[in-house]
Every structure is written in structure tokens, then in C-alpha cells.
Image (cartoon, rainbow, N blue to C red; front, side):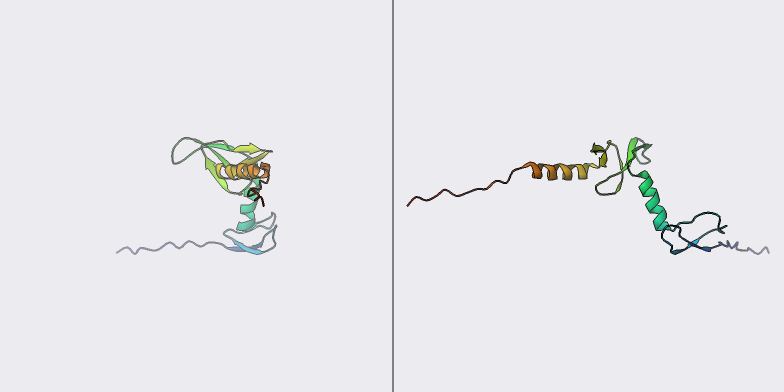
Length: 122
């Protein structure tokens, strides 16, 4: 009988120091030490900052239609939408934040209205 042998994969895990925050981090490869390494949190922040302020046209995987990818400057969330984001003063806004901003601006424009009761004559 032929014995089935299980193939065991060994993953080399190397301890490195994040170049941005200085915390220890483990990577799944052998680090050569000639470049900077970043922890997952710092890497995610760097990618997020790089995408901020840009709109990218992509094909949506669910619908197959053209969509726009952007990061809303107000809520700081990544959005994939069929509409083009609203640009106010060079900042991108999603529909929800656009409505919140318009409501806040409208509230600022309104004057304070004081409703007074009619005076009673003696």
C-alpha cells in the first residue's frame, strides 16, 4: 500500500520593526533588512492617504457597470458609487455627507427668528 504523506508547509516568520510607528511586527517572509517594513495598520493608513483626493473609474464586480471609487473627505470612508462625488471647495463628498453639509450651511444662513407673543394692553 502506498502511504499518503501530508505535505507540511513551513512559513518563515521574521520579526521586523515598523518604520513608521516603531512597533514590532511579524512578516511571512525572510526580511533582508535593506528596505523599510510597515505594520498592517500603518500600511493601511498609507494606502488610504494615497487614495484620498482622487476619483478612480472602475467596473463594479457586482453589476458590471462603471463606478467611481473615492474617499469622502467628511466621513473619511472609502466609497464605490455610480455617481460622481460632489466637489465643494476642492473636497470630495458622498451623497450622505453632501446632504449634511447643505443642511448645516442652510442652518448657518438662516437668521435667528424670535417669536414674541402679542403684548397685552392694560
